[in-house]
Image (spheres, rainbow, N blue to C red):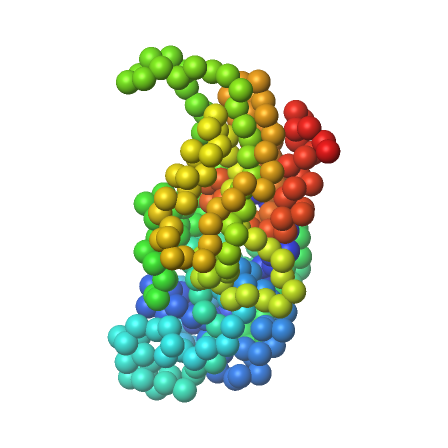
Length: 313
């Protein structure tokens, strides 16, 4: 389990009356100033830990307890832009139509599977007397508080307005596992339907040449040089690259290309190098799941060339 977030990511806390991302694909504020305040401090992909507010709108059983995590984009929207019609109707029926209307979009969400008081996680940042302030402005967690938050068992849930979650989504596992690169998938040798012979194998780092933000449904930030990356091993790099691009329409303005590669005498040593890259990437790159990453390509290249067995040049 990871005890730190990918490089450049932050985790905030915020009090709210409930947690229903399946119907409410946004995080909302009643006052525009509150929403605009957090926009000055967060980036696309940052996280917010939601806990039950102490207000009358919150079920008593939820007050001061961790409810879940949201991954958000730093973009201003309105509640109606990303909410189910049923949710907006219920808001109106409860007299809340004018509340939480200034919003930011939620892209992913995880519901807490443990009943934990917020003071046990944000033991320094959270103070009962500051509850109203945190509800309005939010507050970033310190690194040791983040380490505690990443231990919370969660299950990923659907978000309104986003694609359905995958079958391999995180279920009743530590939140930090979401940001741990997967282990290299080991190859096999011997007779199956064909015989695969061990031999020279390539460790490669591919990058997406095109609008990576559009690929991941993210807002492009001025000056951000992050790109989508993929690490892997192959005996036929050209063939593997063709497979990666096979699902991209010919008219699309984007393709995977090989950024850098290194040759190993056999598949086992290449896979070991791949796993070493993934282990070292935790503090440098954002894991997108499996073999895919997001980050600065120069940082990724330096990381790649630092792996034992990769030739320096």
